[in-house]
Amino acid sequence: KFLLSLSPLLGSVSSRVEARAGKAMQGSERTPNSAACMAGSSLKNARKSVMMKAVLVAVLCMAFVGSADANNKYKRGDNVPLYANKVGPFANPSEQYEYYTLPFCAPKEEERKQHHLGEVLVGDRMMKTLFALPFLVKFEDRTLCSYTLKSREIQTFQRAIDEDYYFEFIYDDLPFWGFIGDKEQELVHGENVTMYSLFTSYIFTIAHNGDEVLEINWEHDPDANLDITDASEPIDVHFKYTAKWVKSEHDSRERVREHKESPQHLEIRWFSIFNSIVTVLLLTGFLATILMRVLKNDFSRYARMEEEQGLEVEESGWKLVHGDVFRFPEQRELFCAVLGNGVQLLCMVAGVLFLACLGVATHNNRGALLVSALLIFAFTSGINGYVSGSMYSKMEGTNWVWNLLLSYFLFLGPLFVMATFLNFVAVAYNSSTALPFGTIVIILLILTLVSFPLNIVGGITGRNFSTPFEAPCRTTKMPREIPPLPWNRSTVFQVAIAGLLPFSAIYIELYYVFASVWGHKLYSLYGILTLVFLILLIVTAFITVALTYFQLAVEDHHWWWRAVHVGGSAGFYVFAYCIYYFKFKAKMSGFMQTSFFFGYMGMVCYGTWLLLGTVGFFSSLAFVKYIYRSIKCD
Image (cartoon, rainbow, N blue to C red; front, side, top):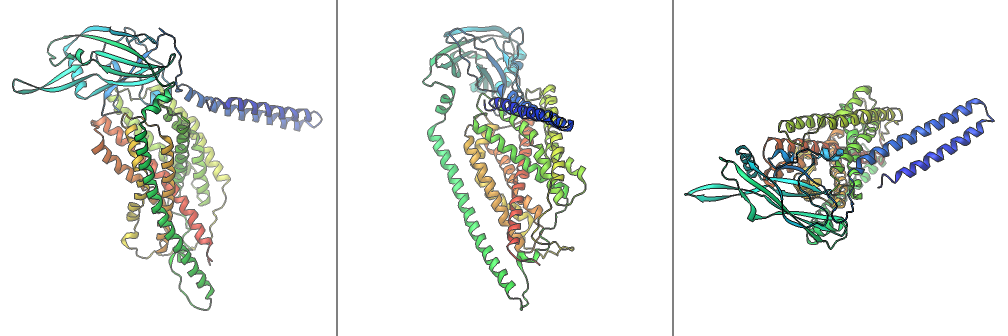
């Protein structure tokens, strides 16, 4: 709705531009032809600009309209379609298969729902079923189908029950879940035997408000379970289902979702979040106070040294390296590419969180955040190129082609390789998680026709409009030798301790995010997530500034790359948490799920390193410029 509301605005802008251009054309009747040409050219350029904006809005609208909340209204007896989406092991959320890969009774003619890009990205493959649940029509034990299970089909069901398979149905764009069967151990003739039961009687309980479907739940009749322990002979199976309609006390789906979120649970969660935030802010404030007092003493000491002109006073501390502190780092192309990608990822995360807080990521908008992340990433490639090109120009770089290519492929290259490998794994498992060829083509077109040109344009713009690097102190020709450093001032030690404080600010919320992405819990408190992200940026900036000061205080002027490593060190802690979560919290197993978990989480941690490393560097750069402007440099 927000994106669609921009269309009238673009229309008014277009009409105003054309009116102004028309006035210019009328004025040009009394002027030479050059003025008329200029007015016509401005009109064409204005129309092109408006058309480009309109195309952008249209693309965004197409991405989100398909995933909008369904507010379908029905009358008694109206057909409400029920789609079977997927089945898979409950502990392996990435291992998904089409529903009819199991030998359920299927319609004679396959009818698939048309999916938008977001649904395809999350692995949705919805197909029509034999279930018929007309609006407000109650019935009991209606026959779905009857057929005979062969020995191989029985074994397929047994393997699925062993792996705790669940199914996902979609009813009026409302997802709900259930299990296909159960097993238990029984003592038969002195031996433990696994008894398999197939659920054959489904009970659908549907809540409504008179003309809308608000909620649906599934359960099974345990008295109608079919024993499929013996797979040596065929078994006749009879599926049936029941529909129960209940009047809801709520008037909308949003109210239903709010009611499901327990107030006590929310209070505990808010308390834990604020407890973590207050602890981190107290530690940050404590360190900030110490750093300010130390800086104040340094400024006073250096001021006294400048006043004592007649005495020979030897400089020490961070002032001693004023001729080397602004010496550009090695591997400038790579360094600038890191900064460009970090700023791009920062813009992408901020945009996705903004859309999530607006309500784009509801339970019915399947894959909306993935689509928004893809589009925002593509359209922010120009920012990547601009930041990288601008910094490279400030550092007096000359290898521009390599800089532009590196800024584009530094994050996108490994992500593309990892996604391609995981897609081949999904294809090998015949999983619905594998992206179809058409979807891959669409993504490649977005990246090649939108992202790459914007990156090139941004890089050229950054190069041409960049200002010289403003350093408060002149850089000497010969670098100063760095004295031997104690072990606690080494890069490895500082990187190891730097990420602890930022990670402590997010680890509580990180569990809920993991439970949603790699589990079956629904995440909805994006306001808390945004708050935690802001705290993470603040803490990262401060801890990097503090460690940069301590590094300069021991006369180590190689702070450029270290600021990036220190700022991004929280990414290593996130990856360590991934290992802990996989080992002790989740019950994932199998090559496909393991590769998906560590493959994509490895890319998330790499992106975290780029993002927070960029935040840490720019914070340190501002701090270093400030302290060296405050003293007199020779």
